[in-house]
Length: 354
Ligand SMILES: Nc1ncnc2c1ncn2[C@@H]1O[C@H](COP(=O)(O)OP(=O)(O)OP(=O)(O)O)[C@@H](O)[C@H]1O
Ligand SMILES: CC(C)(CO)[C@@H](O)C(=O)[O-]
Ligand code: BAL
Image (tube, rainbow, N blue to C red; front, side, top):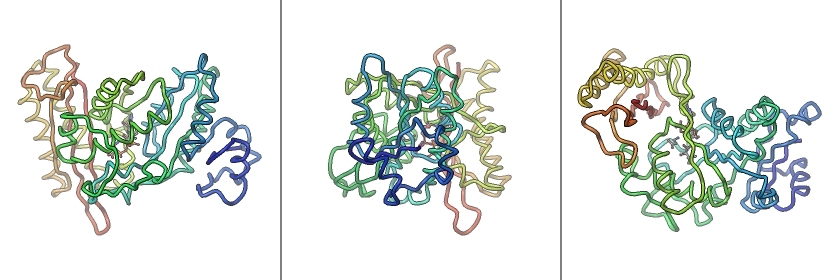
């Protein structure tokens, strides 16, 4: 049985799920409940802080380690890779699924963002079953709260109307992604602080695709004295190299084809580095040329936002890439709409040189 725990003691809430009163969409597999009894036997989905905490405090501290993977849902192989890494290192893995309004500006794609909770739960359970025998079943909880649970004072997208406590990591949050999305990392840092406080992890797992996010959250964990390790998991890619991303569902046909330009630009710049060139300006020039060519050839379907070579501490731009220093080559690009009803899609990606 899949237990979606909404409040109070586990037994009571499991009972609730089996009634028709659950507000959560039911995973389609529940209609074949008998067949899935074993499959769904280990994973609980909590939608309230209190029910999650009741479960978390019931775990024996001396033999438990909890790995947490914060996500916004619409799970793909990139997310699954994070969960798999966590399952190999912790006795319990918790996936949070929360589409966080605070990291979207009023003009961004919050409303269009894909929401696929039943499919997400099924993917996690399938992973649970496919883990090596000593790790099977370790994906023990999903925390999927409502917006009201996470922001009891409300969370208007317009920053000047927001009320309450927000967390900002300066000056990192104003750089790169923060240059174009000034609200973004304040929203991420705030929700992650809440999620860390609620889920009480020993380790947290984030993807390299969002590398600036990992730098900022590592800073946050250190500055706010959390006793939590942050792990960065390599980027999962499609066969042609496109970084997997929940927003890729917006890319069909020609938009999907042209999206690969971002990865090609990074690889071209990396090629310059690997050929022995150390000057950042030479690498960045080549990356810009690749995107520009893609733009011309596609009739203006893509637009480079930035490409940058920065060191991983304060994210300062570097002029020369020194070997062995681990410089981050990162870029962001827009894929423009091609027809009525489509929005602009923002893609980000990065490679680490050395
Ligand atoms: N391709 C990927 N490989 C590894 N980790 C990833 C990948 N894509 C996302 N992640 C990680 O999964 C976690 C949750 O990310 P999120 O739910 O925002 O998905 P996303 O695919 O990054 O979505 P978006 O399209 O909004 O960027 C983050 O730590 C993110 O870095
Ligand atoms: C970390 C995160 C889950 C916070 O909402 C989000 O920014 C993401 O998925 O990368
Ligand atoms: N993973 C990034 C989430 C966002 O773009 O809002």
